[in-house]
Amino acid sequence: MDKKRVTSHDVAKLAGVSRSVVSAVLNGTPGIGVSGETRENVLAAIRELNYHVDAQARSMKTGRTMSLAAFGDTRHPLFMRLLEGMQRECEAHGYHILLCSPGHRPDGEARSELVDLYHQRKIDGIVTLDNTSYRDEAWAAKVSEAGVPYVSVEGYAETEGVCSVLADYKGSVELALDYLLRPGTPQLQTPLYAEVYHGSIRSWAERTRRDAYIRWCSERGMNPFFFRLPEREGRVDWEE
Image 1: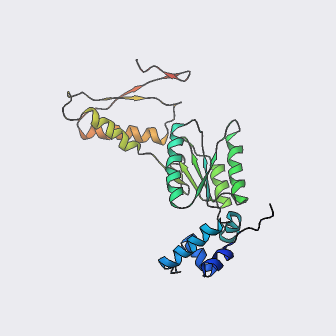
Image 2: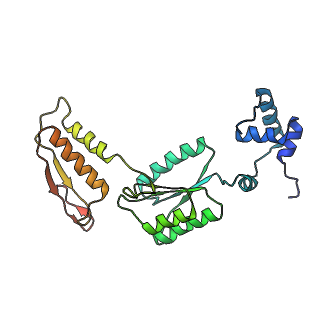
Image 3: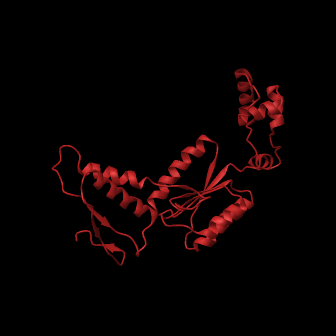
């Protein structure tokens, strides 16, 4: 418990270099040239001394925690895909992911904790998986006021000032329709467009899909044909 912590100064002394060179090797600092031999000497000293970077000290120096918060419902399959993509990019850039889920708490309460984590310097940014109609002005104002880098996946599709990553709903509809009429298949009449959504207001995603279907039919001289499928107690009668 009383063992002295190894520092970058110890590494520099053993490798016969300055601490700035050690920092350049560890962080890839631009503007500081380090030869291959010098780099290997520093890495050898790090291994010999079993040196580990003090994350807290680095955070105080750089102002970055090298961690991002991923917020969403862990039961949602798209959230798992989001995490896979984030993990690949974070590994490539030296970041870690802090997984956050609303659980049984109110959404607003859970999101407020994310801003608190940013103020506490435990994360550098926030990525949330939202539904296609999500547009909480209060939440957008909160992250803007805090100055926290923020990206919404699927939410805020038509909101200025909020970075949003959106699925290609237009392309997906065109791909599905092209597949129905691919070469070698019997010629079909106009493909039926079955609509299923909550209430009477369509989200931007549904509008995008619908417009893509209309445009696709128009380009082929077909008349669009819509059929509304009602949702009964969370169930859709697809056989109908």
